Amino acid sequence: MNRRTFVSSTGALVALYVPTALALDPVPSADPLPEAVSATGDPLNPPGILTAGIRMIPVVGGKYKVWTKRVGSGPVKVLLLHGGPGFTHDYLEAMESFLPQAGIEMYYYDQLGVGNSDIPDDPSLWTLERYTEEVEEVRRGLGLDHFVLYGHSWGGILAMEYALKYQQHLRALVISDMAAGTKAYLKRTASIKQQLPPETLARLNALEAKQDYDNPEYDKIMMEDLYPKMICRIQPWPEPLTRAFRLANQKIYNQMQGKSEFVVTGNLKDWERWDRLHEIKVRTLTIGAQYDEMDPEDMKKMATLMPNAISAICPNGSHMCFWDDQEVYFRHLLGFLRTV
Image (cartoon, rainbow, N blue to C red):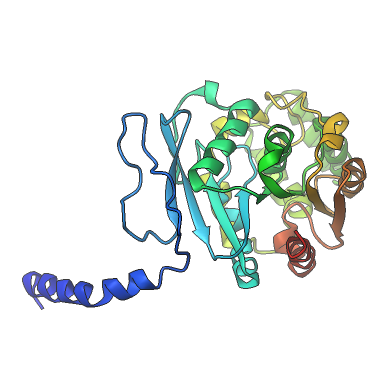
């Protein structure tokens, strides 16, 4: 078939099948979402076109745009905040195997600076305060209200900050694998380091003393000795997780966290919210794991400090317990979401 014949025949197929596809839109909307436009007034999404749930949302007053994707449909809507800072939504793709099947509508979202979103080279953007406002911009852009906010790791920090400022929009909150302060996190990671063989620990300490974080030997200890213990305990790692590591924006991570998992030198180094957890009054689930880089006892403690919270611990999981203790993780998560 030549190109001209192909174009002609596909045009006929489109005429035949597009109306049916439109009729099968899985999430028809009686109230159309507000039109997303850039700061120049240009539309960000093609009107009247199905895009597999993908929608670009204006942020920073319309100067930039971030990528979101809706999967599934249902009365309970969950916005997912990925970790990092500077990673992408990809490693959360385990959710797609569980939430939509349970009748839960979920939204992926790449935060500004990563993945499918705009990636401006502007260090002034990489702050907790601005990212908190970004979540509110995304909420408005997606037309969400009375929704569930889920935050994993750095996303858990962001979820707590959002709840403290915009709690009126929340139906419930999930804080996954994130303690309520940097000091608790560093105490836990320091104890995990002690599990290394003496010679490896000595070498790691020497590299950290010199702040030689770019040394290939430092990276080797992380990836071969520590991450398989506390980040994800299954081998090989699931492809979405390796993809997220490959796509990470290290500039954002370095500015907010620092160059090491064990020494926080970025602008999150003084972050502490233990004394404000009592202000979070919406229904909340804190979920962690036995081998996580966040102490499971801290995850339990957090739930006791919030007036309407419960906790759950995955006995065989680590920081990515939705991968390495999947059955337990999703039993707790779905059980909670069914009650909100």
